Image 1 (spheres, rainbow over the protein chains, first blue to last red):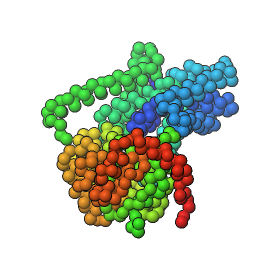
Image 2 (cartoon, one colour):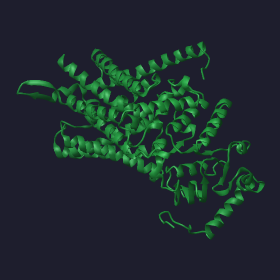
Image 3 (cartoon, rainbow over the protein chains, first blue to last red):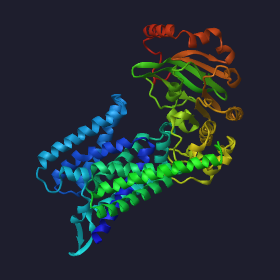
Image 4 (cartoon, chains in turn blue, yellow):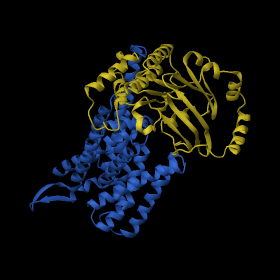
Length: 292
Length: 262
């Protein structure tokens, strides 16, 4: 039972972190960049792990996060300087970096019990309790993954609260922000760093593939019914947590993959909200003809 | 020109190797409503973006009130094309107009009473007070355009650069924008507007810039709207390209470079 609660708490933090950043990615039409970064951190994880020998070290956190930032630098370079179309730049960058990561795993970390392709791609949410934090010899205060997620949550929360106006302006109208003399490049890379950090701390919990579902789906669901940005962020976090809790229950009940169930539930919630919202809008329009 | 709002000097801006603006050179007066006209693809938006510092010119320079843009950014307000943003953004009219109060140095601060008052006044001026809390997605095109103008007004600038504010707006918005422009002019503000409806130019503007990659003409509407000028801008685009090519040969070097003061 205690294990279940720690898994739910940890996964909820993953969902909150991802959903908050997902809102900005979505509004900036950068959903795919989140996807790219989540894959591109792989070589960073492997290299950092190889040198530190520890899945939870600070070195790994920083090294892998930087790889994600390098990926977004590379995408921007290909789009803006080399004039490659946006989706192609993303495709080139993340497949390249991910492939390098695969090679590194299969050579440097061959037969390693801690990191393998499965773990990286799908996470091991059921096993996070193996990496326990025990203080005073016998007091168990939860899995390591929970605390790394908590750390990321504080970083993300603090940055988004302090920089809310800047991120909002950047998301709505980047040209206007530049016209005001605001260094939009700097703001952009702060956001990319946070996205990268989120995917790095989340990869061993939910995996590099499905973390994208946590980034995008709850934010997209919230956008359907939000008229304010802060409300969208709040709702996105709620939808993320709902998917985690319902998904976990379903996975235990049906004995299926936990992360898979969570993201599936997230998708189902999106569909439901979409349908309900469309239905309501129709009713509203027929009631009072277009107000504008 | 003694009182000069915008000085554009030998400006060339290229996109992917091809010049969009070629050796454009003019000085504009202060306190007037100035129209920039020219056919599609003639570089009007590029000119505005280069003036705003959003695009880097290949050669030449821009001065605003005789200074570098970076020194006086806060005195310049930019109204981008309405279609350049996604109006499904989760924000109200008030939220967007408040962005006009954002500054490089106050992004981390909370908005104060003065900001709130200025935002409310700006919304009032464009006649959107009753829609203040409405989400911007639920506005008509004309109302959205007025939100953009209110945001620029909230900036309390002296020079306003507007990219096609009359496109796709209803008659009410059009007359509301026009009376606002008069009011701004009476307050001594300078407004530069990209426009493409030749029918209305002489009614709307005190001063015109006619553009087609290079500067065709500038001056009062009477001076600019001659048959010869308009044919040059709109008629023979093919012959114009040939002229540009020969111009490149004649005029390899701009007379003044960006960082040289004379």
